Amino acid sequence: GENVGLHLPTLSVQEGDNSIINCAYSNSASDYFIWYKQESGKGPQFIIDIRSNMDKRQGQRVTVLLNKTVKHLSLQIAATQPGDSAVYFCAENIHEGSGNTGKLIFGQGTTLQVKP
Amino acid sequence: DTGVSQDPRHKITKRGQNVTFRCDPISEHNRLYWYRQTLGQGPEFLTYFQNEAQLEKSRLLSDRFSAERPKGSFSTLEIQRTEQGDSAMYLCASSRMAPSGGRTAFFGQGTRLTVV
Image 1 (cartoon, rainbow over the protein chains, first blue to last red):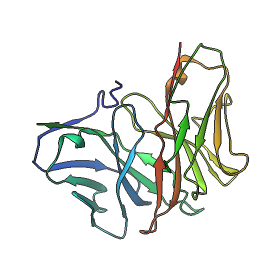
Image 2 (cartoon, chains in turn green, orange; image 1 turned 90 degrees about the vertical axis):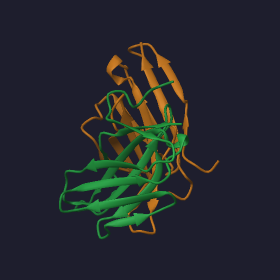
Image 3 (spheres, rainbow over the protein chains, first blue to last red; image 1 turned 180 degrees about the horizontal axis):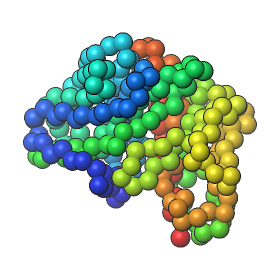
Image 4 (cartoon, rainbow over the protein chains, first blue to last red; image 1 turned 60 degrees about the vertical axis):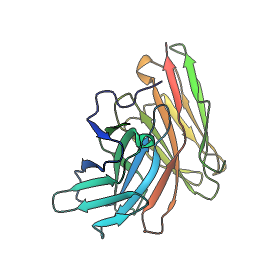
C-alpha cells in the first residue's frame, strides 16, 4: 500500500511506551491547532485540537501541549499500541482579517512506528 | 456512514484527459475544502466554499482546475487536460465550529489520481 511516510521523520517506540511527537509552527497569528493521524491510503483523521488561549488539552490517551513562546506543539500518546502506527500531522489555522476560515496549514508530518 | 465521502477512491487517466471528483460533506457542515497531498508531504490547501460560494482559491489551483458546489451540498473538482504533475491524493474536508471555538475540519478518504 501507499507509504505516505516516505522521507518523513520517524519515531520508533516499543508497544506500551509513551510517544511524544513534536511540531514547530511558523505563524504567530495562528489561533487554533489540530493533530491528525493518517494511515496508509486513507485521509487524515482528527485526533485532538487546542485553541491558542490554552497550553494543554487532554483526550483519551492523548495530550496536546502548546508553547506559544517558541511556536511549538507536541502530541503525547500514552501506552502506545500497534494501531497507533501512522503518520501524524500538526495543522494550524491562521486567524485572518475575515475571521476563522478553517483553512489549515499542515506541518511536515512524523511517522510513528510501534514495535510489538 | 455520516463522514465525508469521496468518489472515486482511485482514478488512473491518460495525460490530456479530463477528470472529475466528487465530495459529499458531513450534512450539517456549511464549509467544504479541497486539499492536494503528494507523497511524503502534508495536505496543501486548494480552495474552500461556504455553502455554494467559493470564497478562496490557492495559487496552486491553476486555470485547468475548477471546483463547484452548486447547491451548497456536494462539491466537484474537475481537472482539465491532466498532466503527470497532477498525480496526487485529492482530499476533501468539511468543517463545523468546534466547542473549543476553532473550526474543526474532518477529511474524507481521498481520491488517488494517477496520470500516465
